[in-house]
Amino acid sequence: MKHKTTIIAAIVLLGVLSGGFFVIRSSPKTQPQPSSTKKLNLDLPDVNPAVVVNLQKTADGKSVVLTITHIPEGTTSIEYELSYNTEEGLPKGVLGEIELHGNTQVERDILLGTCSAGGRCTYDTGVTQAKVVLIFHHPNGNSKFVKEYPLQ
Image 1 (cartoon, helix red, strand yellow):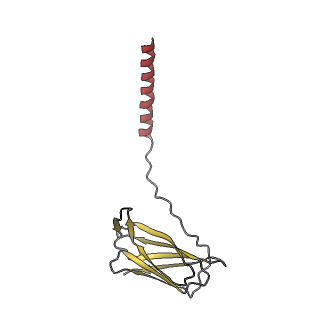
Image 2 (image 1 turned 90 degrees about the horizontal axis):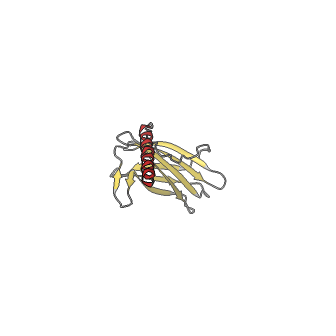
Image 3 (image 1 turned 180 degrees about the vertical axis):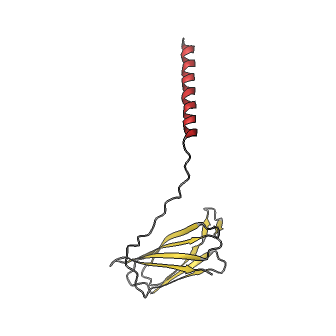
């Protein structure tokens, strides 16, 4: 009798596993969704027009140099978003924040591509323009700067 119960339990278990396999296999396939990225809040006043922002591609084309001068006194940090399309038409972007520590001008080298933890980098090619969004954090209120730059 014990042998018969074991066989019945094995058959039931096999049926449940087989049924689960077919349910999973017949479920509709979904396309992977792109990971959500943080978008900067643009419901802010424009930054003081005295602020000068420049974006220049480096000679090797692997990065751009973001230069910001005449930053308003008291600004504590600047969040940035650099977005661009690769030669293949893929949208890419870089987010970051610059702590100012009292400085009224900064310069940042921003990589056009990705690097692994092991130090191997893949660079995006054919980048001909980029959009820069900056959020200036100031105790008296935040402000924004938005501009598209051609990159030669």
